[in-house]
Image (cartoon, rainbow, N blue to C red; front, side, top):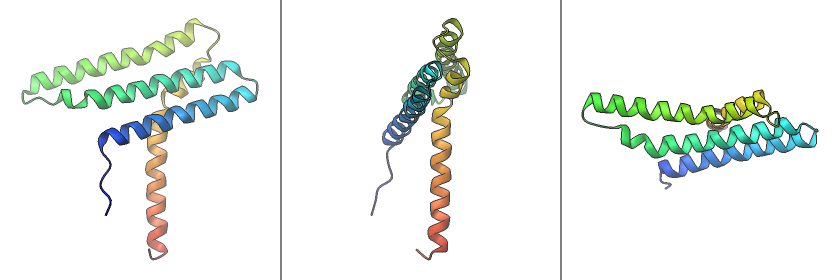
Length: 133
């Protein structure tokens, strides 16, 4: 019997996979001679992973019994996380060393990993069902 993974393990798994994907894609871009794309992907992936960790760590703080306090806390958290995600975009705009499009793609790497993980799980469940397992 297996136990369900904890929220911390899931968060750590997604953030580490996402950053590894960003670094791997950045290394491919570097090998192909696109240094700015490499830097942008890694910068965006780093901030995306940190944002996901921040979201997971502060999620429980937004749960209040008072609706007004909960709404204000959630809005404040969302505002500061968006402000945090604006940092790599501003860096990419200010410095030519970073590709802006690659930085923006890197900011979505956690969402890409989560979507890919769920698609993989759904496909593996359906294939095991048809194989009679």
